[in-house]
Image (tube, rainbow, N blue to C red; front, side):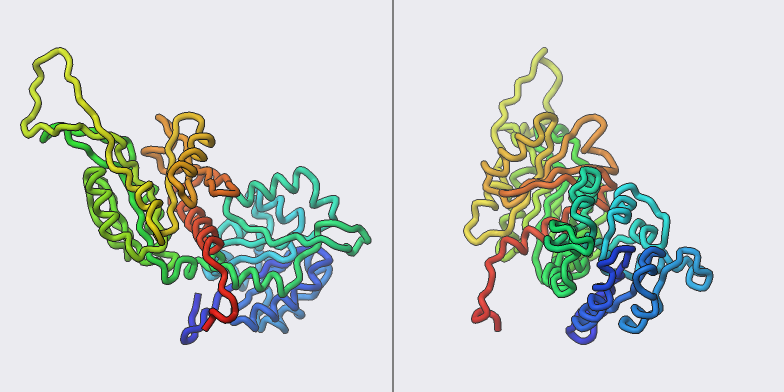
Amino acid sequence: MQKDGNQISPRIILGVTGGIAAYKSPDLVRRLIERGAQVQVVMTQSAKTFLSPSTFQAVSGRRVRDDLWDEAAEASMGHIELARWADLVLIAPATAHTIGSLAAGLAGDLLTTLALATDAPILLAPAMNQAMWSKKAVQENRTLLESRGIRFLGPAEGEQACGDQGPGRMLEPIDIVNAVFEAPVQLPSEVLKGLRVIITAGPTREPIDPVRYITNRSSGKMGFALAAAAQQAGADVILISGPVSIKTPAGVNRFEVETAKEMYESVHQRVDGSDLFIACAAVSDYRPEIESSEKLKRSAKNLNLELVRSPDTLASVAELQNGPFTVGFAAETQNVTENARMKLIKKNLDMIAANRVGPECGFDQETNSLRVFWKNGDIELENAPKSVLAKRLINLIAKRYVASQPKQSPSQVI
């Protein structure tokens, strides 16, 4: 994303596919540019049945890309550079074929190839006959893509080119542009700009004696991935971590703790003035009531430890007046949905991310999957490398955070 003074100049790839709604896309290009965006149009071969590339070149000021095998553009792996260039990929119109191709992970043309290659958010503005839109296959593809972090804009309802009535019309260009610029989650380098975020990560250790302790299997990888994603999204990030051997993400302020009590104290020393609190750490629920000052010797056949509850950092932050938007985690071995919803309500959280853990999932793994819950909704984030999953979760948290903020009246805006 480029800036001109204080003006954000997002770089947007506009994918145009083969539907009659493509006639709206030149106006969409014009409106995006009026809002300061740089727009690179990528057309499918079917789209050229409805409009000429020269139309888009005239309104965008850029040569249209339409061929994965364009020797001039691809001499230096141009489609990869294009995928890296984008702050946002917007496909409008998005046909049923394109939606299905993205869901299946196909790379049959330039547009679907760069959609697979990019790390930028992807928005789809569907356009198709109402009967097509209602088909189970299309709706299942939509659900799958949403679980991967792809956002749908529309479709709208109304009269269609074929004469049918119902959902399937592409949103009007002005509505698409407003959605792009009014939802900061769509601009990854600005998604958490100006916000202060506290993230906890890793396990805690509760000492039994000078050489033994109670702990858990948390590696800290998910929490550190979230810290990196939040920092890349423009946030001022404080990472409070239990004992792990992971390099601190660039630009992140890290504070190390060992016990649940130290985690509680470190968070509360820094939580004032924070906007978001993401409790990813696996904090010990219980600790030994008495810590022996000397190593316990192996003598008696049985050793009994009296355990007492550790302070609950997550619940205490959620109880703060004017406290931060609070996101918890629930690592469960069974009844994941039920236990996560119960924790969301019991601890008065804004969101909770839940996952199943066990010998082959969750802890100590390079990948993870999450089901995220909030008061009136939930979404599945499918299995992916933790770095990728963290970006999806940060985008989702940002979206819910923005939705939670009170709306300003015109008189309140300076």
